[in-house]
Length: 225
Length: 241
Length: 42
Image (cartoon, rainbow over all chains, first blue to last red):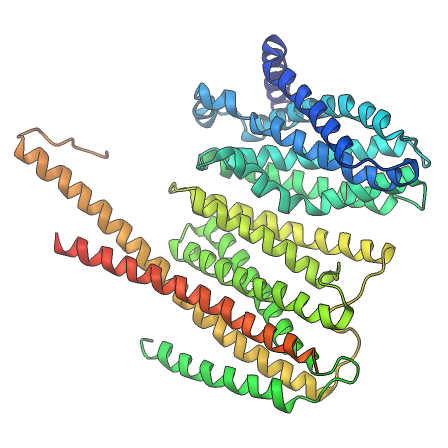
C-alpha cells in the first residue's frame, strides 16, 4: 500500500513541477475559463431572482467544458516521450499512475473553478440562500466525478482517430447522472429550497462506484494501448 | 443449423404480421386516449427488447474480457448495434405518442429518459469502435460497456428523484393493464424478440465475415511480401515479425 | 380522429428505422462479398 502511495505522490509531484515550470497549458486554460464565463454571461442574462435558479446549470456546464480542455492534455506529455511503454514494463502498479493523473487533473480543474466561480458570482450577483459550505462539498465531489472518468476515458481515447473529440463523446453520456446531481444540488443550495442531501449522496455514490471501476480496469486499458 | 435461419425468418414474419393485426384490430380501444394508445404495442416491446440486447452486450463484453474469445466480441458488437436501433424506435415512438396525448413532444418520463441515456452511452460505444482501429478495440469497448452498465442504476435513481421534485407526465401508462391489452402486448413482444434475434444473428455473421476478409487480406499481404523478397533474392526474416 | 395520424406515423417510423438498418447491413455484406471474391481471384 505504501508503494502505491509513494509512486502516486512522486508522479503527482513530477507533473505539478513540470506544469509549474512551463505554465503553458495552465495559462491557456485559465483564459479559456474566463472566456466561457463571459460568453455565458452575455448569452444568459437573467435578473437576480431567476439567476439563482439557473446558475447551477450554467456554472456546471461551463466547468464541464473547461475541464474537457484540461483533461485532453492529461496524457499528452506521456505520449510524446513514450512514458506509457516504460510504465507498462515497470513493476509499478498501474493504479498509482492513474491516481496521480486523476489527482493532478483534480487540482488543475479545482484551480480553474476557483477562478471561474468568483466571476460567476460577480456577473450574476449570486448570493447563496442555503448553507454555502455544502457548495464546497458539492463542488469537490462533482469535480472528482468529472475528473476520475475523464482521466480514464482520456487514456482510452489515446489510440483513436480524432482523439480530442473522442473524450467528450465518451465522457458526457456516462456523466449524465453526475451532472444532474451537481446541477440540482447547486440549484437547491443557492435557492435555499429544501435539502440537497439526496443529490450529494448520489454524487458520493457515483464517485465511489466509478473510482472503484477505474482503479479495477485501468490496468486493462494501460495494457491495451 | 443452416435451415434454422430461413425457418426462423418465416416464423418471425408471420408473427410480426399477426402481432400487427392484433395491435391494430383485436386490441380494445383505450378509454381516454383512443386509438393513438396502440403505439404502446410497438413502443413498449421495443424498449424491453432493447434492454435485453444491451444486457446481452454486457454479458458478451465481460465474457470477452475473461476469455478473449473473438466470438464473444462479435456478439457484443451485434447486440450493441441492434440495441441502438431498437432504442431509436423507442425514442421516436415515445414523442409521437406523447404529442397527441399530452400536447408536448418530450417529458422527463423515467423510462424514456433512461432509454435516452442508454442510447447515448451505446452510440458512444459504437463511436469508440468506429474510431479505434487497433487489435485492442474489443477490450476497450468491453470496458466501456461495463462502465455503461454501472451508470444505468445511477441514471435511474437520479431521474426518479428528479421527478419527485418536478412532477412530469408518465408516458406508457402506469397502473394496471387490461388483460386483453396485456395479451396483445406480449404477442408483440414475442414477435419483436424473434425479429431482434434474427437481426442480431445476421449482424453476428456479418462480423465473422468481416474478420474472415481481414485475415485473408493480411495473409494476402504476407504472401506478397514473401514473393517480392524471393524475387529480389533477399533473405526472409525468420521468427516473429 | 386526427390523432390516428400519429398512430400510423409511429408504426411507419418504426419500420423505416428497421429497414434503414437492414439495408445498411445488406450493403456491408455485399461489399465484403465483393472483397472476398477479389481476394480469391488473386
